[in-house]
Image (tube, rainbow, N blue to C red):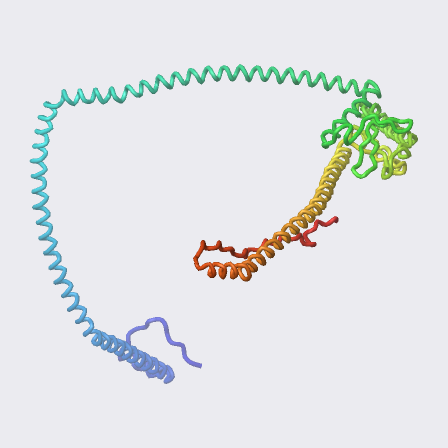
Length: 450
């Protein structure tokens, strides 16, 4: 085991202590020597590394020396250029300072001259200038004054018109108020009339039905008849169809219980009134079926229309009795409201228009066929005239040929025998033109009967 190294300082070795050193173990001395040698080696190594790094840095600095010399020479050249530029700038600055001084002096001289001239001109021309300004001011103020007067006049006129317009507006508002009161009174009268009795409601439904037919473009006693007698009954309207047949429309207004249901606040009473309303509608269906209008109608009339003057009235009846619509179909009766009856009447009116168009087209076709026949007959006569003209031209040319070939040579020989020349015979020429043939209408151009 190694002996620990003493850490506390002791007395300095002396001759008296040399004897004690002889007692120190050899291992301790060897360790001490090794430590000294290692420190010496590390110190030498560190010095060598520092010297090597310094040598390398010195070598790199030596290599950079030429570049530094070039940079120094370049900087010296730039320094010379900068000195030259500074000298030129100083020269320019001095020249500028001289020019500025001259300008300041010239400006002072000109200021004094202008002040003298301005004072003289102001004194000499103040009266003329004042007079001129007064004239210009009058020229500016007079149009403004006139414009203000015109504006005031227009404002007064506008104010008068505004008061008149307000008066008219007030009068129109009064008229609208009076019309509103009249409309409310008329509406109240209509509501009272509808609630008063079945006869008034029936008349209202008939009038509404007639009005809808007129709005659809139909005419009374042309497209429809009112109160036309059919057997023992007299339906409210008979609408004639274009190709035969007709539609019977009977207006009904069972609306008493419907109005009572609308005014009722009790749900049970309201349902009972609606059920009674549906029963009344069904009763009118049975009454209309018992009249058997279809037996007195021409062929093609298979159903009768029962008109109710309110869509809500019909919907309430259908809600109360879900079998009511099927029942009406079984009786060959169609339930109609203003919207559906208008569509039906408009369809019939359109059918009449199409029917009249077809009739006009048929008459046009008949007239076209007759015109085609007459045109064929006229072309035949015209062609006969052309053939006659052609025959006359041919005969004329034959006569001219006979005259030139047989008669004219004999006449010339007769003149030669007389020994004297007589008058020249007239020349007769043939007719080369032929009559143009008249074109006959082709069979494909004949109008079709389809």
